[in-house]
Structures are given as structure tokens and as C-alpha cells.
Image (cartoon, rainbow, N blue to C red; front, side, top):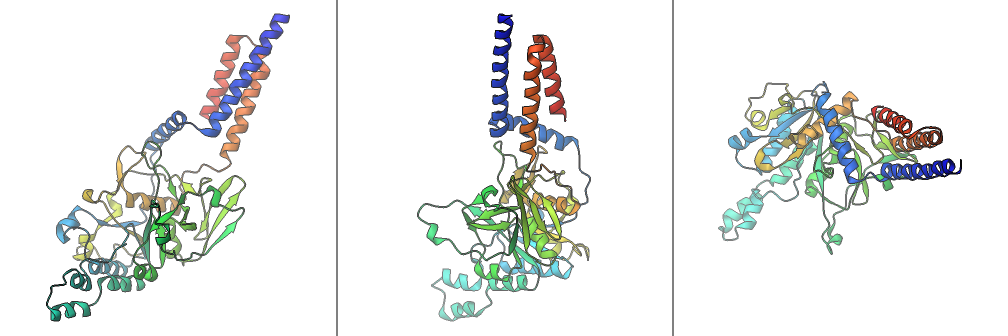
Length: 392
């Protein structure tokens, strides 16, 4: 009897120790577990294909456009033509997955500045001509345009050079969301004249998982100590009237973002898992077709439009769970498709609590049964419980 009691006591200690290990693994999610979880996620995404409509469109700086119109960057007057023609065709709003951070080198004033040996009369003529960046800003002012912004790593000693960001109106529904948000200390903005003329500003920065695959996209984040929306939700916000958005939180983190009169559910850190589908040419309109009049009339009518690039040389491709790289602008377009179709993959922020409680309950059940079961029966029961848990 004493030996049996001692053996039972040792088993209880051992199983309690295993329970503690399982709880720590659930909380800290080490690399080998997160890698296994990501691979399972990728397999499920690949097996279960989402059949959603390609709602937003992409005006694409593709290989055909570079061949027809010349290498990038183009004169800002050409980009202004793009905005003007897309708006005339009926585009509701236009978001740029591009940053215009520097002055146009092809602007007449810039040419005069870069060539000080020009004859005085010619230099004066160039100085008096319309500035390309102002022309682009005027096209922004006559349309609903969302300029893109992206993050940048801070260089030590240069923090005082940061530009102020335009204020954004939003509301908080619940506790402070800042501790949970992805944080980017600095940002690359567009030229001030373009920022001021735009109807909105959206971040197109995302972070890959440890294996380099982009599975999550931040809907809301903290940038330069200010809260900002991602490019896709900002496009939707502007297109639906430009009303302030709201962040709903609880004690477990962020529940979602309220914009366009709907709650977009997010993970506790403000990110979403888009239900990605293979690249679809139905989403794309070549810039060359738009500018050269070959696009069917009304092709952009009623659509939310992204401007980005699929040209290989411009290097805007990202690894995805589908096992193939995809143009970054198409990932943003699919995020917006998911929001509009309410098809985002959802992992509520209270899921970790459910996992911890379930782990404790199942492990406690094994510990309670341990003294009354043989080793073979205990192993069988444990396999059934764990297998059922994983299956659910």
C-alpha cells in the first residue's frame, strides 16, 4: 500500500509538472510550436479556397506599362493624368501603394536647379513653368485620394528630424489600445503639398512571420506615437464619407475597428488574417491601358481603386501562405475584399484564455484519473483527450 501511494504521489508530481510545461508552451509559443502552427495554417488556407468577388481594382504599373511608358519613376504629371482619368471613369476613391517622398526630378524647376550652367533665359522659363508636384497635388484635391505611408527604422541621433504627422480623428471604446498595437517609431511621408491635398493617409507596412511569410496585416497601428489605419481600411473610410473610426478594446486587447458603420474584428494586436486567394487578373487594370485609352469605358466605375505595381523589377512581391509570392498591392486589395465580404479569418482576443482554461481542465482530469488507471489506460485516455482537443 505504501509503495502504491508513493507511486501515485510521484505520478501526480510528474503530471503536474507536465501541466505546467503545457501552460508555459501555450503562453510563450516558442519557435518550433509557432512554426508548426503556421504550417498547419498554410495547409488549411491552401485546401479551403475562398470564393469571394474581386471587389476592389488595381491600377497596375506592370511590365507592359513600363515598356510602353518608360522606366519608373514617371513624371508626376503622368501620375496626375492617372488620377484624373480614373476619377473621370468613375473610381470612388484611389489609394496609392506608393510613397512620393521626394520632389519630382523631372519637374522644370528641378531641372533648372540641377543644371546651373543653363542660359539664364532658359533657366527662367523653366522656373516659371508649372511645378509637377503641384500638378499632382491639384489632381489629388479634385478626387478622393489616399496617399500611402510606410515605416522606416530610426537612425540614432536623427529623431529630431521627424516630420509632424497630420492628426487623425478616432474614438476609443474601452481601455487604451496602445499597449497591444504594432508600433513603428518613424514613418516615410509624402511631400507636404501632396499630404495636404490628399483625403486620407494609410500605412502599407506589414511584418512577416519568423519564416518570412506574410500571414497577417495590421488594420490599426501606432506610428510615430500616433494611431493610424492601414491602407485598405483608410481607403474604405474615405470612400464612405471620411467619418472618424473607433477602436473597440477589452481587457484581453483589441476586439476590432469600427469604420464604415461596421466592426472589423481583429486579433488582440489590431492585425487580421486575410483569407487570401491566388492572384486574379480580374483585379488588375494596366496603367498603360488607362492612359492610352484602351481601357473599356466604365471599367473603374463604382470601384475602390488601388494604385501599385506588379512589375518584377520594382520588387514589391511578398511571400504568402499560398506558397507563391504575390504583389503587395494585391494583398491590400484582398484585405479590403475580406472586409467588404466579412470573410476575414477570425481569432478572438479571448482565445488564449480559452486555450489556457481548456489545458488546465484536461490536464487536471488526467491527474485525477491517474491514481485509478494503469499506465496503458492513462496513456490511452491522454491520447484521446489531446487528440480531441487538437481536432476541435
